[in-house]
Image 1 (cartoon, helix red, strand yellow):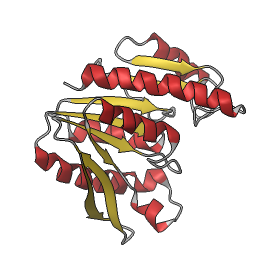
Image 2: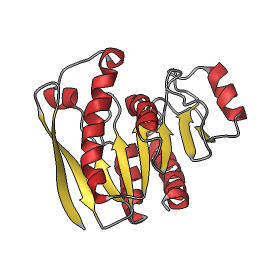
Image 3: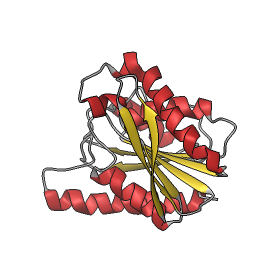
Length: 209
């Protein structure tokens, strides 16, 4: 296992060093953080960990505005974030992976929707962690998993009803969990984190080939 960095330059004039862990896999797992939820935060850290347990190489994206520590309007800067993310991914793809699995949290789900278009010719799968009303994917194939909390105020009850009826995606609803898939009780948050990570592992195992 080799611990490397994929280096890019951001719009915010920051040198980005994206963590890139290589274990000679044919599958690349890409972690796309949330707005203030970085790849070392629990959901993404453990999703990446189980991905490596499944034998995947791992690329953890870092956003330029996070490195610069500035606030942005994500909708005005989305195209920039997608472009910067794609540059890092394309550098990793020089290893000629046969499969890419994306894991996105909140803001990462918006970026993931754009990357679906960019990599439409690739063999890809997607895990959407806490998407919002505006980032729920449409017209999916069967290799999409959506995880959300019923207490998440960024996802409307009407859309929850709609996505639970769809047969083109896999859906996991965590009862009463908030936008971070957490609860007031720390122990309950840890227990439910285990449930989500286990399901991510199962999804990755299913679609890594």
